[in-house]
Length: 302
Ligand code: MLT
Ligand code: MN
Ligand code: ZN
Image (cartoon, rainbow, N blue to C red):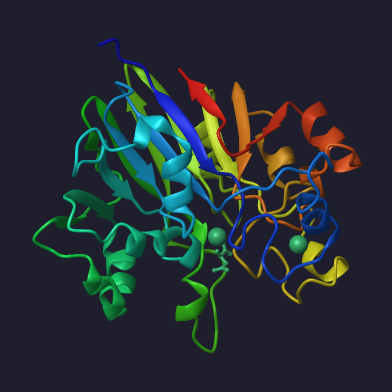
């Protein structure tokens, strides 16, 4: 079996998906109209493999059942089987962990996660539904490479972020750099890719890490920090939610400008983000800057 680094975008949208059940913003309305040009998208998840046979899933969204049905590579090969050997969590947000509950059917796999994300799981007894006789929770430290699936290595590193919304206290550090929010460096067949679906700010350290990378999947939650306010869909800024915007001087497009990253793909894109609409100015801006908009079913092989 020839080895490569294969990445399959299972879900390109942020929490809520596109359309979100209770939203009639412009994008959500268009996504409900077939042929509008705005395609429905499921919630944040990426599948990766080195051999195309054995897979790891990075973040398990509540849409995981639909996502696994949509991709033959993830179908069971016998009466009780899964090609998914492991799950890796990059934070404790609902859109990234709730899918674990769907995967509860006495099937063996390993969940790789940091100590802080494990705490979130442990504080929520509903996750006891995952029978520990089958599902192994393996805590991994930052900057410590481990085998995620055969031929596929992962290494986690802290990126600015915050604790999950449902764990927030009176005050919230929205640029906390800890094992609450991590990015992933993936290596297979001597190819390297990064997956960072949530990031509150670009830091000098993160820049150095990403410089010259062949492929980066990056947080594309909002185009503009005040987007939820201007679309009247919410009162929070992107920054308050722990996400840097695409546009603006502090945005991801500007931050990546001189990094020489060959393929830059936005994922975890909120339903309010105008880039979902191919006819938007923002889509033009993003594409002109050399970025790609992730979408459900997108495949990248290095
Ligand atoms: C986020 O990415 O900010 C969270 O998924 C928000 C949420 O939990 O709804
Ligand atoms: Mn999210
Ligand atoms: Zn919407």
